[in-house]
Image (cartoon, rainbow, N blue to C red; front, top):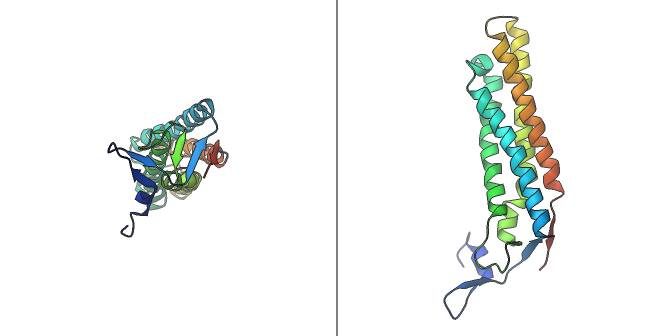
Length: 178
């Protein structure tokens, strides 16, 4: 196969025209474990995204201070990528006998990096919250103090939710079959 398309090597064309997967395989420990993991993960990510969206609608979040807005933007992007990881993990994959099966190339791009992405988003949220506190200290008790405090609190809540997602992702109920 051409470079970058090695993941297709695991798929075999059947006589009836369908594909089956013969490559490395990961399997959820059970349907209940899969559902519980995905439900908790989506709830934590949803809380983080809700916090990020709500602080984004505050008047002048970060007071236009780059040291709180740049980490905020990074957190939004990495949270979206974390959501893509969860969507890949929860879907049914072509050529799989069971919805509990996860091909190795999907695992490598979703389950294996979920904790890294969630941790990176948590750190970005925490840095943004610290940047906002620095901005409050440097600017004093100026205009929009309440909104700045809400921004910092929202970023701390998002950071905690994402860090909990990171710890949840390190104990995924997946086992390698072949």
